[in-house]
Amino acid sequence: MDHLPVGRHPLKPLVVLGATGSIGTQTLQVADRLNAKVAAIAAKRGSEKLVGIALRYPNAIVCVTEPGEAADRLTSMLGERVRFGPGALTEVAATPGHTVVNGVVGAAGLRSSLAALYAGNRLALANKESLVAGGVLISKALADGGGELIPVDSEHSAIYQCIIGEPDSSVRRVVLTASGGPFRGWSRKDLEGVTVAQALEHPTWSMGPRITTDSATLMNKAFEVIEAHFLFGTNYDAIDVVVHPQSIVHSFVEFSDGVVKAEVGFPDMMKPIQYAITAPERVESSRPGFSIAGHDLTFEAPDVEVFPCLTLGYEAGRMGGTAPAALNAADEVAVARFLEGRIAFTAIADVVGTVLHEHQAYEPGDVSDVESVDREARARAIEVCTKLEMS
Ligand code: MG
Image (cartoon, rainbow, N blue to C red; front, top):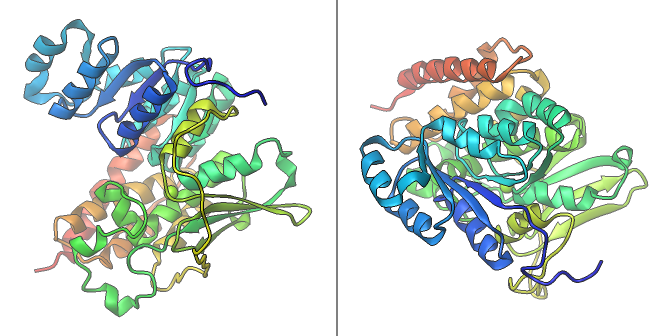
């Protein structure tokens, strides 16, 4: 492949959803380095941080989904280019000829993912809920809209990079690596007294509070199993999880001839973000080189007795239809209650398990089906949390 000098690469303009979050911030750094045009940025609120970003990209459309009282102030500062409400988000995502980086946190990301794919855009996906809650719909949008779906999450980016160029039928098994979170090796009894501060202490990746908590319960890995199923068409029986605390091997793919590929490197989200934007090309990056000598790599089976959320993820995936949407909604509520100090860490799995096992899964016809399951599962999760609240 010819070397592509930075700035000469024919990159599509970027739409960065969730611009003030961790993925969004790093995407903008990658965009600057690649000299990619930033066509639009979006965030939930009109924070100082968003205004700062908007001023750095004076030609970008700025979308604020929940401006609240900041709307007038934002309009006076940014003028005509600021747009408000969730509709603004799907509108910029649906502008053809763009790469949409979806770093929105939460179920609100699904509509913009669908809009991007139906418009035939490249979707660089970091929003978990799109595939967990809306996998069935995303698969349909991908087939009907002619867009491209490239994962940003480190594990899925690794699998994507191992699989690219290989025939689909040659994939025997994918193995997602998991750091194991801060409570690896703990007993169920130990976990009962876990504090919020302990759960937010992730050993290798620095992320937002929901995903950090989900990493501590292994629910994040459960979601990634479901995402892998939709991204790569892999059966749940052919998706494994292995705990790898050093987070250097980002995932493995085993092929039909027994050959195993892996993508490895020190934890660094800039690399999968850049790859999702430039794929299948590689553009030179100034990220630190790979020097593995002196590092011990270890791998162990996950303890599903202590971390039942992983099993719940497989269960929801195999139930299919709307079950993963219910799983996700219940988890979001339970994690929020835990972070507020209202339920115990171990109650997260209890809440999610109760809601999932009560759920009657069906094939969602459109996004409103997913949203109504999301609402119902949330309402039920709140009831279950209230019963489990600590006094
Ligand atoms: Mg991950």
